[in-house]
Every structure is written in C-alpha cells, then in structure tokens.
Length: 104
Image (cartoon, rainbow, N blue to C red; front, side, top):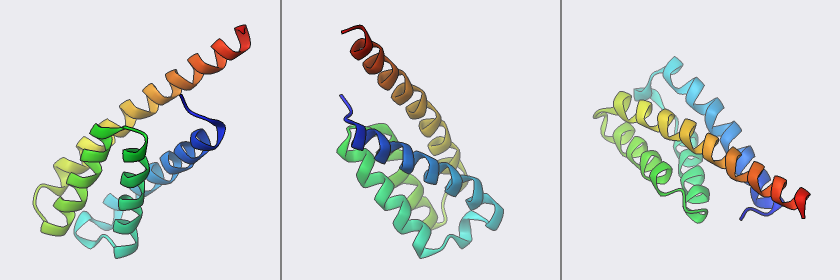
C-alpha cells in the first residue's frame, strides 16, 4: 500500500503539520504567515495524492477559514481531530503491511 519513500514523506509531513498546528494558536489564527499557508497547501496536496480525502478537505477548510477570518478556530479543531485519526489509521496500515511482510 505504501512504499518506503511514501511512508517517509507522509511521516515527515505529519511531523511538520503537527508542529505547525502546535504553533498556530500561539500567534493567533488571524496572524498566520503566507509561508504557513503554503505549507498547509503542500500538506493538502500530499495527502490528496494518497487518498486522504477527509484530511485534505479539513486542510482546505482551515486555509479558507484563515483567509476569510470566519470559524478558523472551529476548522482548526476539526483539522486536529482529522489529523489524529489519520495518524492512527496510517500507523495501523503500515503495521499490518510490515507484519504481513514478516510472515511471508
């Protein structure tokens, strides 16, 4: 399902995205930098390539909310929840693959 390079790309993106989400509320969602918005967009594109549609939608909704200054806090929390769920499912899938490979 995920080759080693893809796994590493996803893990690196998850780590960075988690770090970004920890930092965003400290400065306020109204003061998000363009660089951070670009990084949210890059994460969205990576997850879209791998079929993580709900996470992709949540990233897009947060970007839109930040730009319009409407419901950014709600969209931020929805993204955190989606990211948490994606991390768990991704970990489960990778563990299943590695277990199946070890058995074969």
